[in-house]
Image 1: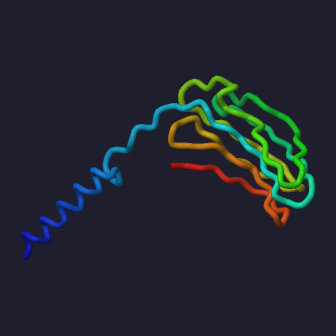
Image 2: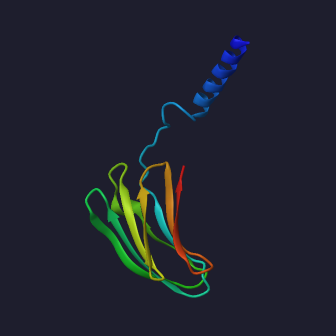
Image 3: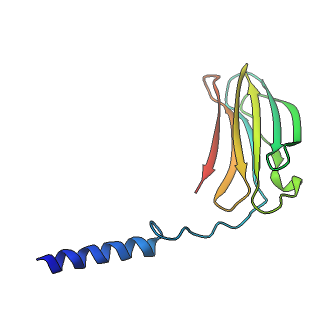
Length: 131
C-alpha cells in the first residue's frame, strides 16, 4: 500500500511540475506595449485626471485631463511611448468623481493593460490584468 501512495504522489508532483504550477517560474520577458484605458459606464459624462509616473526615475511621463461621454471608452496612454528599458513599472494616479486611486503597469509579458473605470452606479475603480 505504501508503494502505491508513493507512486501516486510521484505522479502528482511530476504533473504539477510539467504544468508549471510549482518549481521554477516561467519566463517573464519584457514587453513594452501596455495601454491605459478609460471607461465611463455611468449615465453622465465624467472627467478623469490621469498622471503616469515612471517609477525608475520618478519622471512624470503623462499628465492630462479627459472628459468621456456616457458609455465611452478610450485608450489614453501606452507605456511603449516612454521607451521602457526592460521591465519597468509605471504608476498611474487617477482622480474621477472626487475619488482618487492608483494602479501600477509593469512592462512584462505577464502583465496586461490597465483600465480606470466609472461603473454604472457612478463609482470609480481600476482593473489590471495579471497572468
